Length: 245
Image 1 (cartoon, helix red, strand yellow):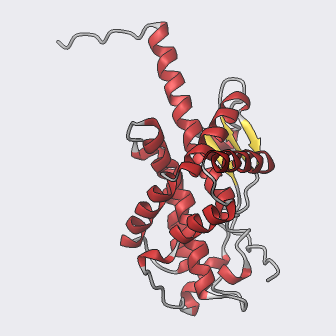
Image 2: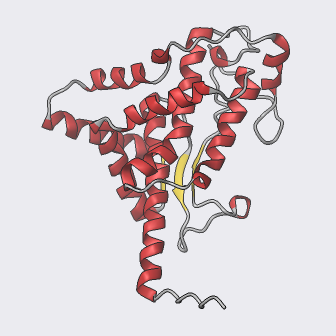
């Protein structure tokens, strides 16, 4: 007969809860930081606690960066749009994928503990959606190349400083708007520049260069029947909103 497990003490339980919350905060802060560095819109970032519980439609979520990236695709990143531009689109798609990958990778890199695969299931779903409905391809080794690039971005001191600033504020108030995150990223960049003079614009160019086509990835122009699949929205099936070029 197997021995009964020892119950956790209150102190042990509190420690586990605190560690889980810290990992969630870092995960969501990493997503939000890359949204700002790449200039890709989002609404707000949240972590769910007893004081700020998750809504009924997000049961099982520990935190979220609220965005509708499908709706906000620029027209030049939509293969079905007459304004589509392949080179610009590839860069944008790669940046989106870096953002999706960043949560799990950042959580592992910044906490010192490998994040369980389960924490990235929603992010993997978004990557599959991007591949199948927008790019017209399946997930492949291209994702592994972008994982390496994302890790390189996350190890830049200015990015680490920005994630730390967002995480500290998010831990205190549970919800941050896009504008609040932008201010925190700007302050973190300015502080790094004061410690080690380096024009902010140069840092931003370095991050943008790291993201998309350094791996030499080439995509054929999507065939019409594949491109048409991107007309469906990610959840509701609504048509994506077309943005002015």
